[in-house]
Image 1 (cartoon, helix red, strand yellow):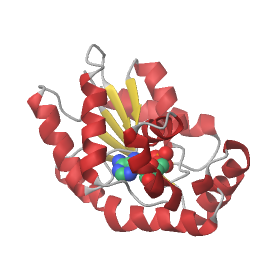
Image 2 (image 1 turned 45 degrees about the vertical axis):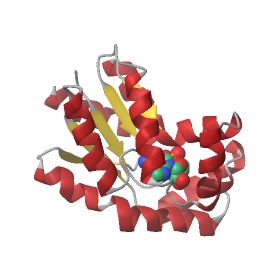
Image 3 (image 1 turned 90 degrees about the vertical axis):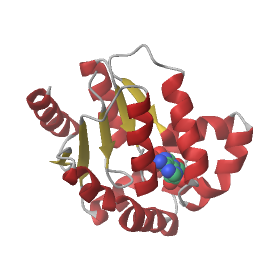
Image 4 (image 1 turned 120 degrees about the horizontal axis):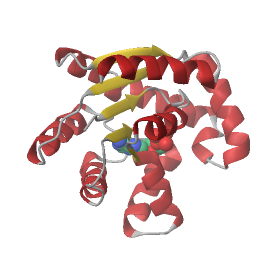
Amino acid sequence: MFNIVIFGKPGSGKGTQADFLKNKYDLYHISTGDLFRKNISNKTKLGLEAKSYLDKGDLVPDSVTIKMLENEVLSNKDVNGYIFDGFPRTLNQAESLDSFLVSINLKINATIALDVNENELISRLLDRGKINNRSDDQDIEKIKNRFNEYNTKTSILIDFYQKQDKFFSVDGKGTVDDITSRLFDLVDSLI
Ligand code: AMP
């Protein structure tokens, strides 16, 4: 089993790159953002609970998010590894993920951050918002709030994973292919 966390600010390309990593290393891709959006469009109880947070660009409370993530792992156990995309995003989520994985005899092998500056991300997100209908990609204030959530709650995870010697940063600028090959080189050197 090889389990990867991919993180980065909104628009850094986590979802796109997680898909390439999933295919190349035969991993199961779990995107908490996608899970929330699926629940919102299916109007489930979880979706109704999460919607107002996504609409504003706020993080969904840990209690809801952690349970959803654990259920997704437990419902998909017969896999070669997981790629966690957009989770964890808080210290509490990271600590819960570690203890949850220990409880099922697993661990995180590597955490990879995609590094892109905020000005580049704003123009990527506004472009993406024109085609994907996501309200949180169409409004500059919501985008800035998502950066603020990242800077105040998620960036501390760098230190958390550095202390475990599991943190790697990859330059997230350039073409999609360039970034994919940087990621493949890194993962190849780790497995
Ligand atoms: P993403 O698709 O990863 O950009 O996530 C979109 C939105 O889903 C975020 O702005 C949050 O509202 C919510 N979300 C996704 N993952 C998490 C998480 N791990 N913790 C809390 N909220 C999350």
